[in-house]
Each structure stands twice: as structure tokens, then as C-alpha cells.
Image (cartoon, rainbow, N blue to C red):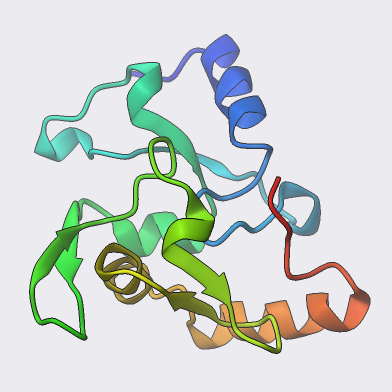
Length: 140
């Protein structure tokens, strides 16, 4: 079922028009951010507002139908970051040069790995955004 246009618009507003995972802002992308299911439909997630958020194509592709991942520090499985319920800055921070996302908590570290948030393309693009003065994003 397609997400109704009014709900898509509401999600975009709630997410400040940026990816809930890597904070990429819509204004810097040549394609539209995607409405994603926090709990994938394949895992029982619904099309309800409280299960929808914005994600860039990269984060959404890597997340796929995952709901948890292994924290590389503890070796234990943790639920992935939920951008609707958790605060990004509690689980992540930007590296000193502003191009890499650093996980601060087990959830954050597991999410960075599972969503491949520091893939070569993302880091290269962020490096250019830093040079242009567009990155890293601040809170809201």
C-alpha cells in the first residue's frame, strides 16, 4: 500500500527533511529522501505514522529489513537506532573532521555498522560538504 501524500508530507516535516540515520539534508541530494519503515513490513511493521521516518537511499538500502545488529565492541546484538524515539546526539557524534559518524552507545555502534553509514561514497560526499561549509549538520 502506498503511503498517502498527506502522511508523507507530515513525516518530512517531523524529520526536518533529513535522513533520520545519517542526517543528510534533502537540500543536498539530487533525489528525494525515502519514507522508510522503522520496523520493516517483513518483520510485522505497519504503515502507521509512528513506524515511518525519512531515510536517504543509502541508509535505507543498507538497513533493508534489519531491526538489530551486533555492536562491534561488546559482540552483543542491539536494536538499531530508532530516529522517531531516540535522540541522534545521544547515540552518535561526528568525527573531528565532520565526515564520519561515530557510534557512542552499543545501539549507535551497531547502527553505524549495519547501515554502513561511513561507506566510501558517503564519506567522500561529506568531505565535499564540509569544504562547502554545509556539514556537519547541527541539532535540527
